[in-house]
Image (cartoon, rainbow, N blue to C red; front, side, top):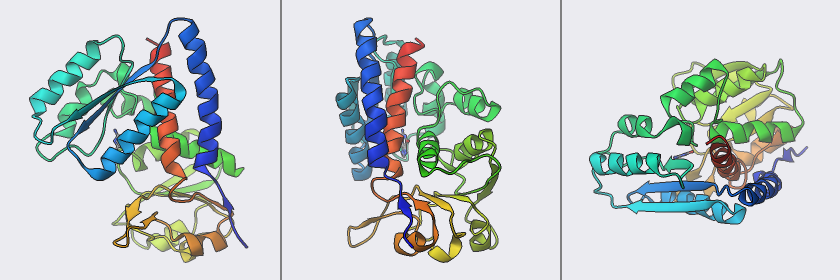
Length: 281
Ligand code: GUN
């Protein structure tokens, strides 16, 4: 038995076509959505992600304003740039690619972004809104995952959802969106006792732990929907997720691939948030 492969590439293409039309309509009204994309340093994975974000902007007719800053950029310099971007009317969204170099404190940078331009939804005002159930911007990766789950055909309401990983970017906001959709949510992490047993209870399993192929087929309840957020580069150069795809496919009813699953959806949701920011300005 093989699981249905939920293609993030295909779903992204569909959603991006709709977003493109929306941007054209806005352009006719004189509104030109713009996204500032800030990268500090030269982390190769971050460079790839940032390039993809800029390409997605181009594809949709969203204006992108790239800022590639030197690794040695100071916290003050970055704060000055953010302050300028906050005031710039051409810029509707500000994205600061994470992780930042070690000498820059993320907790000083993220709160400096205007909440109205915080298209990643990382600002405490926006995370608070997500927690309270009245978000302006949905967190990109979790929002993309909700679309992928919808595409699987499984309803979230009343289902047992297990999120493996408790990061601020994925695990925590993911749990909030699943709960808002009336799922019964468990968050597991590296200190969870008997993780395998917890995972096996899940109708919907979201893996975001950052350990290559950690979740095996034996962790999965037969018929479950499995979403793999992992992006792990093996020594061989191969890119794999947090789920062992070959064994998981035998047990799950639907699964996202890596690459081509969650990744493109995250970027699509970022584009959606940028359009939301431009409309609500
Ligand atoms: N690093 C890993 N994921 C993300 C993301 O969604 N946004 C930003 N800004 N940085 C990231």
